[in-house]
Image (tube, rainbow, N blue to C red):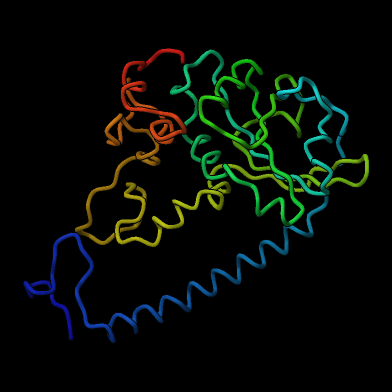
Length: 260
C-alpha cells in the first residue's frame, strides 16, 4: 500500500505515514542496518577508551562525606574501579534551585547495584559545602554516596558536570576517562527511550519531518510545576523533586522559592 499526502486515510498531519505491516518491516529493516553500524562504532569507541593512557593522582586527598573528611581512595570501597558523577552546585540556593541537568543524571543513577556487581564503585561529587549537600541528599532521598570536593583540585575536584572514571592499584589511584555535555547522555535512559519515539525529545534542534510539532528549547521537560507541566518559571523545580520519597503536593506547593 502506498501513501500519498492527499489520501485522507493515511496522511495524518504531524504523524508518520500509515502503511501495511510488510511495508513498515521493510523500512524498519533498512534502518536496522544503520543502527547495527552505529552499535559497532560504539563498540570501537569503547575499545579505544580502554586504550587511553592514565594519569596518577594523589589518592590520599581528602573529600568530605557523612563521616567527615576521608581519603579519596575510600570511595573505591575496596574495589579496583570507580565511576563518579560531578554534580554542579549553586551555593545557598534552595533545593529547587539546584541544577536540573545534574538532577536528571543523578536521578538515573540512584542505584549502582549492577556496577557494584561488576566490581565498580559509584559516588557523586560536588563542590557544595557539606552541610548544604547533606540536606539536599536527605531531601531527595538519594542512597548513593555523596561527597563534597570543595577546594579540591582536579581531577578529583575541578569542573563539575562530568562523568569521570578512576582505577586503583593498591594505594595508587589513576584518572582514566572523563566526559561531559552530551557525553553524559548514556546515563540518561529516558533520553534513549525518547529517541525511539515518533516525536523524539520534542526539541527544536532535532531533524524532524516538515509538518512535525514545533520543538521546544533543549531539556525543556527537566523542570515542571506541581501538576507536571514543563515550565521554567519561579514555581518550577527539577521534575524528580515532585515525586521524591515522602513528597506530597501540599508540602511542595506551599514552599516555592524557599529553603526546605
